[in-house]
Length: 305
Image (cartoon, helix red, strand yellow):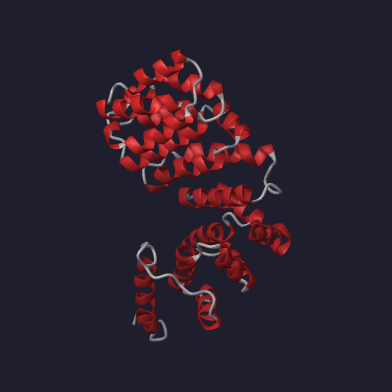
């Protein structure tokens, strides 16, 4: 019924589009079938609309429903990348929706990344890179996430040390945001540096460990932000001894009273701190001793480290 309202009077269309946008932010919303030509044409008409709520709805449908290589491929072939990149110069809400949708389409898909990078002679990628300097924190975060999708999906692009350093510093800066952007920035940071020793070294040189330490000293620390911080620290300490030594010397865990809620996250963290000496293992055990619940987890887990 709501979709049928999109063909009604302007006021009704706008209200229906806003409602559908909110629905498609839920994981329970039905997936959109991109493989039918009729539904694809309808999606393209949404993205071409001058109505912000309609273009936002179209972008939201892409984000929610684009989960497989097949879905990403059909969207690329249908021209959705071109429609989304045309929104990068539009209003704030359209720009942010476009960035988030672009990241969803190209994620883990080298072919889609290549098509995006070559779009308009590279101007689309340049526009996204420029948006990392935007005045709005959420736009900067989404632009970073889009570039991270490009970088992580294909080793052919964005390998210059300048862009890597830029992404590290922008995400560390965004951690200071007190709202949702700050909560999500640590997850983006984790995605950027995971399994990449060169980026972990850049992050270490950018004083990332001290940055996360400062965040943990701010009380109260919300559970989602705490989870993101530890996941980022886990990736940061996964390969370089200098990061592990710096982290342990700070005794970061002593500073946060919320650990009893973070068992799963901290076990992920423990799994990645692969110390070789008994001394380091003992230090890690002491490191967690401020929470009885976590101590039990770690003592059970130490034999695997």
